[in-house]
Image (cartoon, rainbow, N blue to C red; front, side):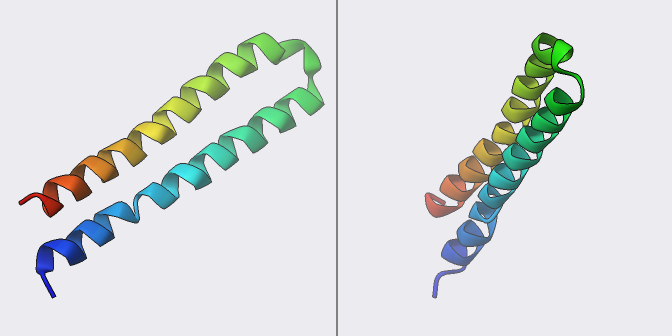
Length: 71
């Protein structure tokens, strides 16, 4: 077994964090809106920012995995 394939698979596990992060941000947004519906505009901006940052980590993990595969 090639070691690069093993390390690329381990790096791709970072994509799991994307799903968990997006779920937690969505849960936090729904909790905030349930408690105080008047902050929907401000809460939505912060939720989109949080989701974008969570997605960025997934992209970094995939880039590292592809770099290891093409090494």
